[in-house]
Length: 212
Image (tube, rainbow, N blue to C red; front, top):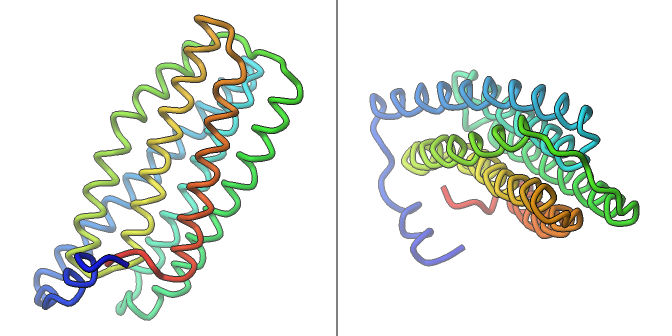
């Protein structure tokens, strides 16, 4: 943890009224994240199945992992004293990262071994573009609220949403490169990099190392 992070965590926390406002904000952001990702998962998996796109299906399953992470935070903040549930919520978020990394790695390796290019998917390209615009907004808002509130789990969940932003970029780039140049391997290679990031974030969430 950096010196700046430690300094920010050492500052006096918000008063009771402000904490109530921030807790409500986190709950609304988590609800929005869950709703968006449910729709995203359904569209991505359906479009991926039609186009035989492993990348799109993997993106849909990433949305499922994001829902699991957000549900863990929602469960924590549903309690009268959210801090009592924070450790369990962090463990659940960590597990969602590990599951995501495991699937993305396996799917990427399998795609490389098969060497089969998926069909063009207009729905997938539009979905990836929309997610690339929406996810950073949700992630930034939740991260700011979580830091002010001093909630490590809310910050960890915001990292999960940010990871979804990276995957949106990877998916969009992979679909476009496949459509324009037939470079089927671009997406699985980039996905392997994202999997490494997911493992790191999962380890930090599991250990509670995210800056509050």
